[in-house]
Every structure is written in C-alpha cells, then in structure tokens.
Length: 338
Image (cartoon, rainbow, N blue to C red; front, side):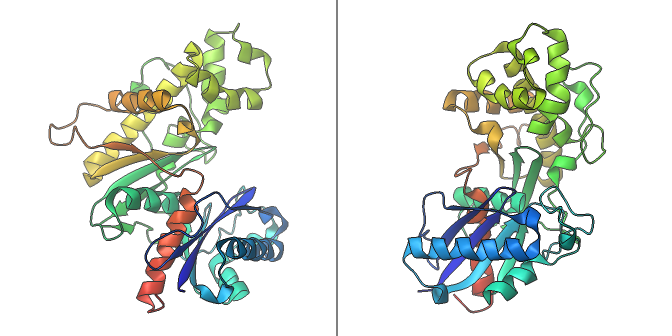
C-alpha cells in the first residue's frame, strides 16, 4: 500500500491524517497528539514521530507503507520550511531560530517531506473539496482564528512566494475607515501594522480592540465584568445566541472580510472565496448570516463578479492535515513514489 501522511503541527496539538494514492482518507475522525513545540526541536520532532506511530496503528498500516509526508506549521517560515530566525509564538525555544523543520522531520522519519504553512494547507484542502484534485481554478481562502491566515490557490497550486510569505492575507491592509459603526477606532495588529485584516478580524482583535471599543458603549454588558481574555472567547457564542453587542462585533469582522475579498476579487478574479476557522464554528443560521454580512460589506462589484460564491471551509479541525496530505501526494507523484 502506498500512503501519504498529513501532519498539522499546532501550538498545543498535532493533527494527523493518512491518504492513499486514490485520494481516500484512511482516518476520517480527528486524530490528535499533544504538541511540545515550546520545548525545542528535539522534543517536538520526537513527539511528531510518536503521534504518527499512533495514527499508523489506528489505520492498520505499517510505517513502510508511507511514501511521503506533508507537514504544515504556523509561520513565519520560508517556503521550504526554515523557521524565522526571530522565532514565533509557537516556536519560542531558542533552538528553533532558523531551524529547517522540514529537513529535520525528513531526517527523523527517513521519509521525503513537503512543507506548507498551516493556512496555506487549509486553503489547499478547501480548494480541493470544491474543485477536485486536478483543477485549474483560482480560490482565495481566509482562516479566522486567534490570528488571521489565508491562502491563494492559483491554477490549482498554492502560491508560496519567493520567501514563503505568499498568502499572508491577514497582514493585507484594508480601508477599515469605511466600515460603519467604528468611528475613531485604532486597530493595531501584533505585527505592528494599523488596519490590516488581522487587526479587525481575529480573536486577538476582539480582545485587544473590538470588545473594549464596544464595551465603552455598553458598560452594563455582562462581559464588562469578566476577565478580558475570557470575555473575548465568549463573544462568538453570545453572538450566535443573538446578543446584540456581540453580533455587532461579528458584523464588523464580516465587513472587514468583505473589504478584503473585494481587494482579492480585483487582483485575482477568483472562482471562489472560502472562509474558515473558529469564526464559523457556529450554528448554520449564524454562518449564513455571517456570509451574507461579508457580501454586504463588499463595495459594489462588477456585474460579472457579483456572484462569485463564498464557501465555508469544510472539516475545520482537520483541514490543515488534509491539505498537507494533498501536498505530500503531489510530492510522491512527482518523485514517482505513488
């Protein structure tokens, strides 16, 4: 049996999936193992290997059946998997600085390894579910979570860029001043930029900017009495249950996405737009409202582009691992291994 593995390395968990050459997944459910990335490369790579062994046993195959591995991680990193010399939230241990995690995993497991950043991997999976494996369409994906990531699939391939920063969509500046109801707001991203997509459309943006702004207007709201970090996590659930202030916060986020997608439409003229991440881990009714608000937040479109569909990314918890597996299958086919 010729199988590829998809490994999604996150801050707290590693997600695994296995796919055969016919593009059938051998593991359908969530398959996780604790991540120990903050303890440095040696511990983390051993943890990845240990979790893979569990996934292999679950699927009833052998390590020798795996012909290639797809890895995805948060950035910043190069297109080939060399982590930033400055480190990052998930790679704070000093030994990660400049570490080639793709090469390190390949050496650890004795298998060829492909690499994507986590948002690009999720974007690849979202594109695949809509257009299939051999597509030549273009899609733009945005993944809204603690931060904001995304991916561009052009002619069926992930846009990585010269330095691996292609598809860093969360740091694209948007004309946020045109969003109604947030006059005087000063949204600063953790990267230092003012008014990029992540500065308004992320959990961090809710905690740092949007919730404080709206609580000034609604000081008697129950969230005003809570720890700000915990309160920010409660906004999504309350919005889903029709809390007026929390729903207004999500309207601002949807309109920020609308402005961003308008920029992407006028740059790439894509076949589809895809939204994923925790922002849509809600009821179907709220999802449809949020997608409609994205559309409402777009400036007037050309008639030919007004009906570009907006999709919800499927398999949110496993999208990254599945996209990584697709990239591994591509590597295996190009190398004659599958």
